[in-house]
Structure formats: structure tokens, C-alpha cells
Image (cartoon, rainbow, N blue to C red; front, top):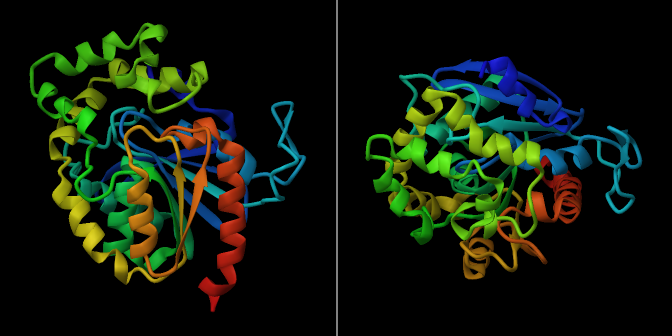
Length: 316
């Protein structure tokens, strides 16, 4: 399958895409809308498509139509510049390259390099799952372009990765195991199992997005090889180091946590809200980890309101 064919997996709502050649490797970015910049960071074994529903709502004005579907009236007028990163986390289309640093600190540096290359300031950085852990590392090591932080359900301190997924770190070291794991997820029925997407998204995921999550590694050997490098490098020392420094990030933060999350405990949301000096906590009901999939309206509303409320303080 060619790169052009794989590009058809990209949700139209994400807007235009381009590939950045950064010091830390190649990175595809998607951009839609205009206005204040919101940068979205996904987690392991998904890609920028995770944010497609939220980007659709935030990048367009209320009531404006996209692909024949009006944005729900409950969503406030938006007009944000939405930038969704396609990080090398196992479901990416463009390999980062043999020399890329795929450790968590290396990936956090890649995010910071992307912000530099895009020349965006006062960014609202939004993370989910592994991406939330990386956002914590960015704001504690390279905060200069960050104006606000939004953490949805994500890794924190010793929960990196969550216990249920730790066996994968050893399995990918076995020759051929990565391809076998991904191949086992070809049947859509199996993707609803607890160790696939069944406990991450409460509802079935759109076919286009779900295929892109599962099939990218099967279609590109370089993606599989990078996944084999990524997983063993995930270690809680990285999230502990970031957590110990979060008290120094004094810009506005929103913790928008899924109340029914199966992998990321609600007490971690409360700890994050207590640690970050200027944070508030909002619960997202009727959702598992992937709130951008399960409750995009609620999440988009929270982000839009938070950015507008926090913008005057960030500019002061």
C-alpha cells in the first residue's frame, strides 16, 4: 500500500496536512481553521484521527456545515486554528526516520520542535492517553510557546503505561510479534476487546479512523520498527520527573477527565488539578479514555470555553 493510498485514512475534518522535517525526525501535521492555536497530541497506537470530531467543532463557526453535517448548536462559535500532530506512536503514516529519538523525552522534544517550526505562540496544548504524558513533559521542559494546557484522561506518575498494557513492552522484543499483534486486530469484531479499543472507547469507532489506527503498522514496515523502539522506552521515571516539576507550570490548565475511565484513575485527575497552580477539573460523563471519540461535543465545549476564559490572563 502506497503512502498516497494510506493518506486516504486521514479524516477530512483535520484539514490540510504536511510533513515537517525536524531535528528529531519527520512529523506529519494537520491544520484546520484560523485563530488562536490549539495543538492536539494523541497517544499510543492511534493517530491524529483521534481528534477529528473535536477539530471539526473547534475549527469552524457555529452552524457552519462540514461534509453536509452542521456543527451541533450546543457548541459555541469557535474559529480556532486546530493543529493535530501525527506522532510516531505506532499508527503514523510517515516514519520518523532511523535517527529519530523515540524515547518519551525525545517525543516531547519533537512536539516542541514542531511548535518552533510552525512558529505558533501562546498555544493551547491538548493531550490524551500517552499524549497527555508527553504534554506534561513538554510544559516542564519547553514551556516557552505554551499558553494553556488541557489534559484529558492520561498517564501520570507510575501509571506509564497502564498495567494492562505493560506486557506489550516485552512482547514487541520477540521477532515477528509486532506484526502478529497488529494482524490479530484486522477483524473488526476483535477490536472491541478490552485489550484493543473496547475499554478505551465506549462506542464503536468510525471505520476510517479505526482502520487507520490498526492498519498503519501493517502497511509500513518502518512504522512497525518504530513501534518496537517506542514501547520498551516507556517508563514511569519519565512521568515521575514531569510530575515533580508540574508545580512550576503556572499558566492556566484544564483537567477534563473521563469519569468512567478504565485505565486512568480519577484520583490522578484530582492530583493533577491540585498540583498545577492554575488548574480546574471538569468531569466528562459517559466516556472511557477516548473522550474525543465518545464525547466530542462536551470536550470541544470545555476546550473552547477554557481558551476564551484563559486568553486574557495568558496575554496579560
